Length: 313
Image 1 (cartoon, rainbow, N blue to C red):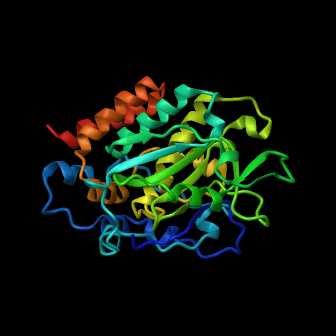
Image 2 (spheres, rainbow, N blue to C red):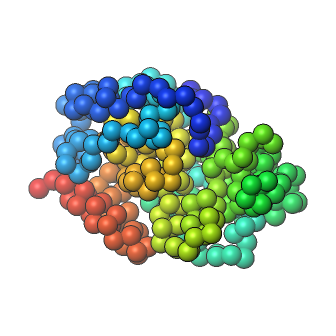
């Protein structure tokens, strides 16, 4: 996979840089990023049309991702030229590996995460048996600031790569335990090796109870879906989006994460559809049913309307 071999999901502290917002958020730049669609079917042309269903990316605040993290953006053509790995037999299964925080906490949540991943990516998803991290050589510590338990991400990636099934497109660890990439770091949301198809991300800091706030199961669930889809999207070679409000926008704060939608903009949707080849209207309809059952009313309504538009008259 022609992408950075190592990706960190983190809150960065960098010097201010010129925002990509003004350069890439114009209608001309967005259409150029989507690429030519004239030769596509009517359904695909509608799917990749940036109409009023998609909101413009607002000008970033001084602490937002694009204000401090210079990113050139990735057009559809650039994505294709990078020759990202495609999910196809015999390697098409997404393997989710729970770490031991899920063992007795909420077995139903694992089934929900598996179902979401299957509907979002339209690929087979296997939820592996939870593992006891103390038995597989993963170092841990108590964070000196929060006093919360943390797991060392390089050890997790080493563990994952030892036994990727032959039909596995990628193997991703999920956990409710906080993470750190090396002793000098405070924490990291996640880390992945794109070249080896392995990754790990934590839901710990997406739950308000982590910060001593009142638990909010619905908010924690939506945030978990977002981080799972965003980070798995990177495993398909999709870089951060700088064109429209999109699931693949970079995020430097929890406020940015909450402001981003759970859907892909036309630029990023075209990339994912290129890699997997799913029927877009069918995907939207499946997600609408899942979101409705999960209690995500607004998200269900959005994909329902989008499915009707893509299907056409």
